[in-house]
Length: 398
Image (cartoon, rainbow, N blue to C red; front, side, top):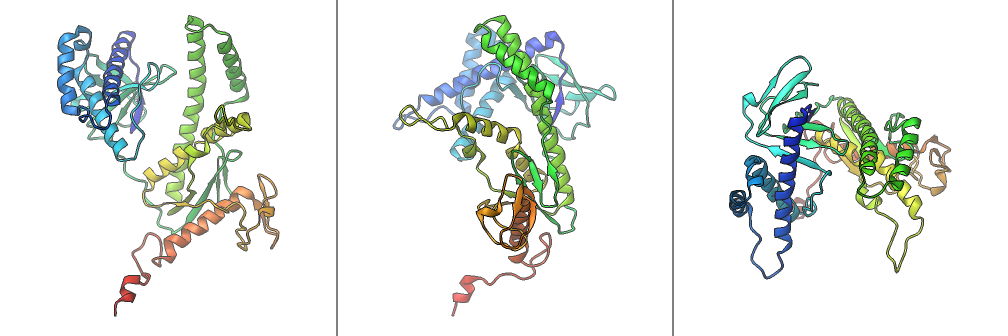
C-alpha cells in the first residue's frame, strides 16, 4: 500500500472517529455471531445475510443510520475475508476490536475524481459523509486506485493508504547472492561484511519514555492525567516504529536492487518471542531476561524485513534452515561450537579463520542459497534450466 498522512480538520476528525466506531461496532457484532456457533448447529450467517441484518439494524437505530453504509458494509466484507483466511489456515481467527487500537475503515469503488492534487505537497481525498480531506502529497498517488483505507494510530495520527500492488524491484542480473543474518546486537549482518542496525530511540528519548512509564504507573485508572500520559507514550513509541519502518523499506529496496539471490534464516519469530512466564503450576525461569530478549527481537524488525523483501524481490528470497550456521566455518566448513567465542567473534578451531560471527553465519546462508539456486538446474539463478537433474520416475521405467 501507498500510505499518506491525513490532515483532517477538527470537525472532519469527529466524523472520522464516528466511522471508526461504526466499523468497530459492526465488526464486533459479526465476531459475536460466529462465537455462538458450535458443532451441530447451523452455519453462522454469511456476508449476504449479515448485510440484510445490517439494513434492519440501520432502520431501527438512528445513530447507526446516520453513518456511512459503505463503511459498515465494508467492515462486514473485511470480516468475511478474515474468516476465509482463518479457515484457509493463513491467519488467526478474527478477534474483538478495541477502541483506540487498530482504528480504521475501508472505502471501495473509488472513482478517478475522488483523489486530486491541490499543490506540490497537498492533495485531497473524498470520504463519504466527510467530504474532501487533505493529505500530504509526499509522492505520486498510484494510478488505478480502486480502494483505500483510513487509519488512526495510537499517537492520534491519521493516515490514508491506497491499495495498489506495486511493481517488484527488478533484479540486477549479475548473479550475485547475499546472506542476511538477523540478530539483536546487529539487526542485519550481510555476507559482504556490512553490519546494519535499526535506528532506535536516542538517549534523551529513552529517558523521557522511562519517566513517562513511571508517571503512568502512578496515574489513577480512568483519569484524564492517565490519558495524557498514555498519549505521550504512544507518540514516543510511534517515533521509534516510524524509524524502524523507514529502515526496513530502505534496506529491503537496497538489497533487492543489488543482489539476485537473497538468503535469510527461516525463523519462527512468533515462537521465539513467546513469554517464559509459564503457568502457576510450572512457573518459568528467567522471565525478565526473556522479556528483554523478546523486545530486542521485535525492535530489530526481523519479520517485517523478510516480508518486504518477499514483496520487492518475489522468487529471489530463499529461507534457509538456521541450524548450525553460527557454528560452521565459512572457509573450511568445519563445525564446532567452540569456534563461536562470543556474540561477535568467530575463530575456527580447525583452520584459524576469523570473522565477525554474524558475517560468518551470513556467508553460510549465502553459500547454501547459491547451491540451491544453481546446483539443481545449472546456470545462473535467473536463467532457464541448463542441466536438469535426472528424474527418478524416468529412471525406474524399463
